[in-house]
Length: 288
Length: 160
Ligand SMILES: Cc1cc2nc3c(=O)[nH]c(=O)nc-3n(C[C@H](O)[C@H](O)[C@H](O)COP(=O)(O)OP(=O)(O)OC[C@H]3O[C@@H](n4cnc5c(N)ncnc54)[C@H](O)[C@@H]3O)c2cc1C
Ligand code: FES
Ligand code: FES
Image (cartoon, rainbow over all chains, first blue to last red; front, side, top):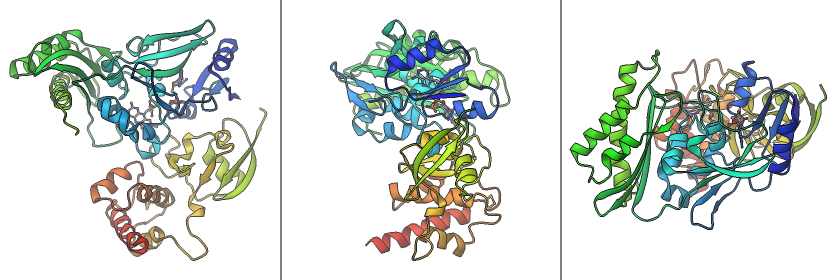
């Protein structure tokens, strides 16, 4: 295995484009090293992105959103008060990943690019309308986070393409987001269902909403029907029932020892309700 | 397979070693530097027996490559006691009998120390969540939690 430490994303993309065999990027390594250890993935080229200037930074964009470097570990994301105040749902999704030790290394970008349908930080990013900046052999492009997952373990990135930052849009006024997952224990487990809700209020009425579900389909995705169920409402019981039903209808989960199809489907509805209520409260100024 | 020369700082001392790029930091600490305090329980980030700090951040050394330590600062269980004796956490682990076979102990001590740096006055719940990445197959955790709470109290008094 060749270990590379490029000092720019252009060099990283070039290395990846020229590589003949199996290539992996190294961010926190909490997926890559586990896969190497298990013999599942034996890279010929491992491209460590952590020597590229700026990859550990969280900065304000000119538009008033955030640019999050690809090597920012979960612990640094949670410690960033201003980001957490604006996008608590995004931050709490990442914060659920693993233990303190894992938080010291694991990144949003790695969570996204590993391609797990149960990745905890991805529903929050998708609901937030986050985008990724991608550097490739042909230059730089941006794409919605929602377009990156392409099935379990797969992404829509082309050979030689590397994500060079995650971009969160400006939060704007009267917005709130939240992420909840169900796991059989209280810590250190993989989501059986995950749900993120991001919304904006006009007075007491939901003016805009995005609902994303995780672990109940081959890819994490937006559920527009669930968002429509609450837009124009004050999140009364009728709206919550419609949300619950739309979230359940969007599920096509696997059946395994950690959750049956019926269980995962029911829990998706319950989490959607609860996450919507938390997001609504946060849009009203709740800080919890 | 060509090896890579790594220069790093371990427990305050400058060290160098030659690493195959696939070797983990845990392998390098144990096999190249003879620091066998950090243990391998799982090799997959689940048990925390290999816990060390890398530039003051708690990590599983089984999920870090040795070559990634280049130019960084690594602190392991071997650096916990100083010339004056055991660290309060180490003393309290003995006092409370917070270990049986001892395999998880180095990792738990390193993780508990990192926890108390972040939060010198944790609740029991915070200790349990904070140490959720460290598995112990012997003690049932209760004595570990008590030892950490007691050490924290003593350290707060010393600091006051
Ligand atoms: C004990 C343990 C517990 C865990 N618990 C959870 C959990 O609760 N929830 C959860 O969702 N996950 C969990 N994980 C999985 C893992 O920690 C996360 O997926 C993590 O966010 C991965 O990030 P990383 O930086 O470590 O990725 P890495 O391992 O460095 O990379 C992962 C993948 O992303 C690719 N990649 C990385 N950066 C880029 C880039 N910039 N551009 C393109 N591709 C890139 C790599 O090639 C690789 O395929 C756990 C893992 C462990 C070991
Ligand atoms: S050996 Fe590293 S976490 Fe178990
Ligand atoms: S004392 Fe044996 S594993 Fe903890």
